[in-house]
Image (tube, rainbow, N blue to C red; front, side, top):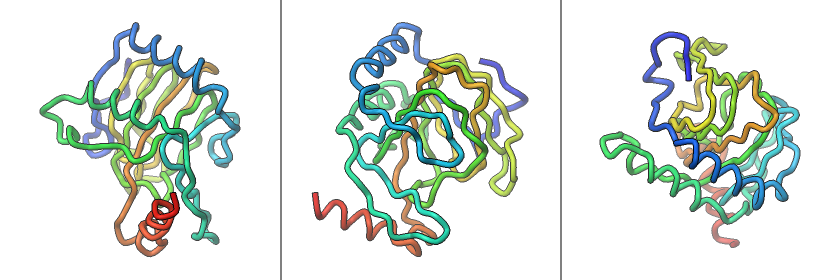
Amino acid sequence: MTQSGKTPAQAVVKLAMLDADEVDDIIAWLEKDIRPHLKPDVSRYARGRQRVWFGVEPPLDTETNYSQPFRTGLARLDVVAGIFQQHVPASSRFKDWQPETALVSVGGNIAAHRDATYADAWSLGINLGRCVWSIASERQAARPDFHMNLTGGEVFMFNAKHVHAVTQAADDRWAINAWRFASGPTAQERNIPGRLAEFRAGR
């Protein structure tokens, strides 16, 4: 992996590098068990990507619709949590972090964006292929200015409220991203906790 300049700690925290055998094992599992569940990504910034949600599928609200429900995803979130717990350093401030939802995807670039209202700020990235992964160093910046040339196996946390993007993604590049659900003022205003509670009560 190479990168442009010093890692902005307020935007990215690198956790680990998976060895090649583990990357191959994860990809083999994804190809065998998860690929049949993939569907085309509906996000306007991720055309060409295939994806599936693990655990809970959160609402991708629009500027005019804040009432979409949470839905049931594949019951595989424990696998993501296990990979994270196995590799997060004991000294990391994220050592007690636990994912509440995860998105598994393959292929496709991702245009610059901030993650939707459901997502808490700090998110997990597990990269399993070649791409250029980029993020804005500052929260208010409109475009990414820090770039990492990833090859596969990188595990890191990133601030999903900073503009970020993926370019030059290999067609066979798998990625796992995971989040906790937001509960701050904007999430409260758009009833993220209330909709999540309704979903959990109805399961």
